[in-house]
Amino acid sequence: MGPETPSTASISSPQASSGQDRVCANCKERFTLDPDDFSFYQKIEVPAPRFCPACRNQRRRAWRNDISFYKRQCDLCKKNIVSLYSPDKTLTVYCQKCWWSDAWDPKAYGRDFDFSRPFFEQYRELQNVVPLIALMNDDGIGSINCEYTQNVSSAKNCYMVSSSWKNEECAYDMQISGPELREVFDSLDIFQKCEMVYDSIFLESCYRVRNCYRSFALVDCAFCLECRDCQDCFMCVGLRRKRYCFKNKQYTKEEYEKILAEYRLDTWDGRERARKEFQEFILEYPREFAILRNCVNCTGDQMFNCKNMKYSFNVRGSEDTAYFENGNIIKTGYDMATGGENEECYEGITPDNDYRALFTIFSWKNSHAEYCENCHSGQNLFGCSSLRGAKYCILNKEYTKEDYHELRIRIVEHMKKTGEYGEFFPAKLSHFCYNETTAQMYFPITKEEALAKGYRWQDSFQFTTGKETIKVEALPQTIAEVGDGIMKEVLACTNCKRNYIIVHQELQFYRRMNLPLPRQCFYCRNDERMRLRNPFRLWQRQCDCKGAGSTNGIYANGEPHFHGEKACPNTFQTPYAPERPEIVYCEECYQAEVV
Ligand SMILES: [Zn+2]
Ligand SMILES: [Zn+2]
Ligand SMILES: [Zn+2]
Ligand SMILES: [Zn+2]
Ligand SMILES: [Zn+2]
Image (cartoon, rainbow, N blue to C red; front, top):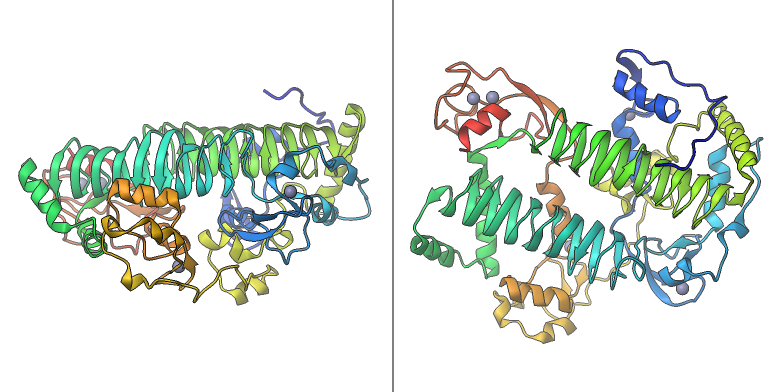
């Protein structure tokens, strides 16, 4: 891929060795660097990291704002826009149209590197003045009618969607990636070939489903977990190739339809009853220790068609990569919070179609970009912000090819002396307050803890309360009773009191799917899904199968297992922490039960 490799003459490489114990420079916990880790760092010529994997992830995520949106002005055309950057921040923010236009020149902010000062300080000064893009999406270029989306590309008619691509007619989602993804609402971690999906987590190839989790190839199902190739199933766990099942029991079509009708899933009360019953019911059955479908030599969860992936989550079609979350087609990389179709990338927030993007934030279609933010279709960039189609630039200043390589090597040497090279941008320097970012979703801390660590804290998210024009208690039970007038009303979330509205697109969807109106705002709905989803963390655990059934005595095996009457000796890495109530089975015991 990459058009050329910069000269490496003076870059020293870390010594390869067997596993090495280190102490994290941040949390002081011990962590191990494997020989595989060293070969990767050697390959991309960076020193081994000083932070443990979790602290690296937290530091990256402190730069990643997915859903904290604000109203502010475009600093160029002065139009009112929606942006990731709150208006109180002293940053220059342009709307999509202005940012992608030729009305301004990012290279006009170019500057010399000062060898008497640290790099991050100088880079932060550049970031303070170079215009940022209000929301990072390709609306009007690769996407159509996706103005209110963040980190979205190649999409059509989407609203309030983040970290997603190749999807159409979707709203209120995070991390959904096509192709062939249509009408997915209120969902998380949805992969290709899904249509008409509501309030679900981790699905592939599903049609007309609601409240389904960790399942593939479902049609007309509701409240199902770890089911595959099923149709017309309601409240089931771990079924394969079944139809007309309720609570894992087989019924006739007529019986099934009667049960389903009795639950009144079209009403708010019916939905709530089913939701509560389902949460209790699923604890009676064993779970697969992790979903690694068609994967070889992988640790993590929510993964398919992968090879040699370590500690990675929500990923499809990737190989030789570690500490990766959310995306597909990744080759030989480490440490990314979302990404797609990239190779040899390290420490990135959405490197997309990149080769060798190291320490980057929204690096799309670049090769050899280091310490860059929002640079697109460029080559050989170091410490740059908001460049498009640029080559051989350092701090937004262009050099000849020879001068670029020479200066880059000197800066890297300088940064090794200051302890900066090989580390991502410090969280303290982030554009965002800690609680505006996904760091707060994945590593929640209190305001006091955040301030003590030198992070900033957002006290004034822009939203209103008390402006509701209709009481949620007055909302009809079913969507059939809701008229178009609802789009003119302001509602108040039953949980956080935040005002929210119903947009045309979602009203249409609720009608098509016969769903009651939501009683909570998108933020509370999203929080609830994040709570229901397994964490993107792993624990070493032993199989919960003790011979004839589960260790907690709740589940009895359907048939004898390979380990006979003794407890299963298998151990594994799983996202289910040992203290959790779920019954967690190893691959062999699980497969014996879900025939
Ligand atoms: Zn640490
Ligand atoms: Zn503008
Ligand atoms: Zn709320
Ligand atoms: Zn087992
Ligand atoms: Zn067993």
